[in-house]
Image 1 (cartoon, helix red, strand yellow):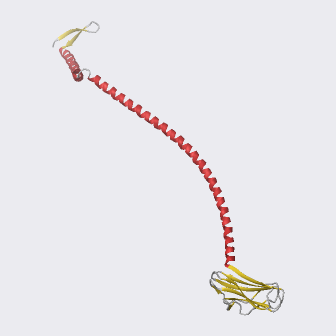
Image 2: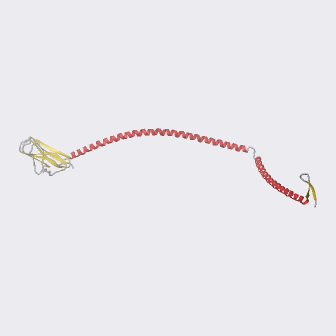
Image 3: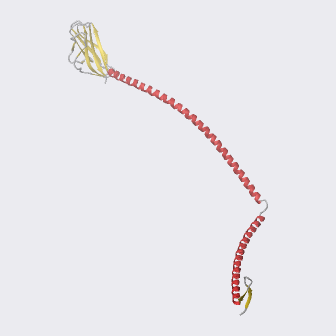
Length: 267
C-alpha cells in the first residue's frame, strides 16, 4: 500500500491512502460530468434561441427585399388616391348636408304654412258653426211657420170642401115661386138645405135639381122668423157639371124677405 504525506489542517502531516484518493477523484469526476451536462443543456437552449432569432432576421430580410423591390413613388400614388377619395367623400357629405339643410328649411316653411292654414281653418269652422246654428234656428222657425201654414191650409181645405149656394127674394109674392140659383161646374153632393124668412107668416121652402128632383121629401116650414131652419136628410144629392140648382118658395103671408141656402161638399 502506498502512503502520501499530505499536510493536515493545522500544518500537521497526515497519511492518505490511494483508496481515499481514488474516492475523491471519482467524486470530482462525477461533479465535472454533471457540470458538463448542465453546460451542454444550456448550450442547446442557446442554440435554439439563436435559431429563432435567425428565422426572425430572415423574415425581416424578406420584408426589406420586398420594400426595396417596390417602385419609387408607388406609396405616394396610393396616398394621393386616398386623398382624392377622401376629398370626394367630403364634398359628397357637404352636398348631402346642404341638401338636408334645404329640406329642413322647406319643412319648416311647410310647418308654418300648415299652422297658418290650421288657424284659418279654425276661424272658418267657427264661422261656419255660427252660420249653421243661425241657419238651423231659421230652419226651425221656418218649420214651425210651415206647420202653422199647413194647419191653416188643412182648415181651408176642409172649408173649401164645404161650400154653399144661397138665394133670396125680397118682398116675396104670395103663391109659389121657383128661381134658378146656380149651375154646377164640378161634381159635388148636397149636404143640407136651409130656409129663412124675415117677417110675415106661413112660408115653406125646398130646393131641386134640374127642375124635377127635389132635395127634401117634405117642404121645410119656416115657423120661426129670422132663424135658419133645416129639413130632413136631403135626397137626390149627386151633382155633376151642368146640373142646375133651383129654389122653391111658397108664400101665404107677407114676409119682407125669404132665403134658401143649399150646402154642398166636394168629393
